[in-house]
Image 1: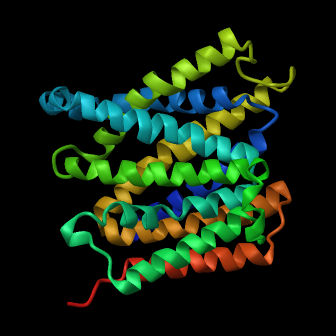
Image 2: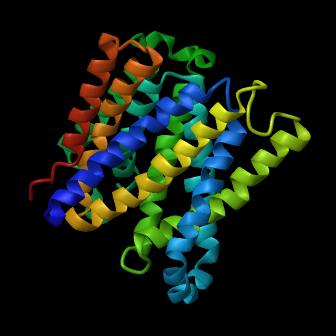
Length: 303
């Protein structure tokens, strides 16, 4: 099989794995405590990632040592806090909506990059950004924009939106290491910081201070809880990152990023099949607006 074909297959697998992440997290609510879910998925995946990336980490140890403060900040916010927000969003909202909101990340990247001279937006791109944002608000409000004032009823969706914005910041900050650190090495190092600084303390506080369960919320569901966490650790976390990095290296970042728009589609199908969630008209309209807006945002400005 040609490398390009393999790269495309890897990216399609990434979309399905990352799309399933929201569905599994939604299903885990009531079975796995939030703090345990956030911590154990990385605690299981990280040793394998470190073993694979260790030779590269040793080769680039001088750069990692000199940039450790910045890498620590990136990992803390872009991995640790982001993971907690994303999973919390799925715990408290519908998987379909969380995945669609997460798809707005490229729009936030464009908005955060406007201060760069070569990234200023044209009128069409600003219009696209507005369309994508309106589509997002439509999904968050579940078809009724006047309900946005009822924040308590939309907590999960607002958490998912915060996660999307934070992940956009994460992607922008990683650009300075392009060509300096291999992608998998960078992912592993930042994940290690995020796990050590956010996920582990969060879990320890939940268990030893708040006295929440170690693994399973309901006694007798430990095996189910362990299988859920194991899937998320091996599937979306480990294989998802590996497949995405491979696909990106084969077909390039611009083409690779377009495949991620399939993740909400995969998530929607899985949520309907396994969770019984219902797709409403505003889901289709909102996601169509997001996709339309992102196409407009990514359109090159005419000289």
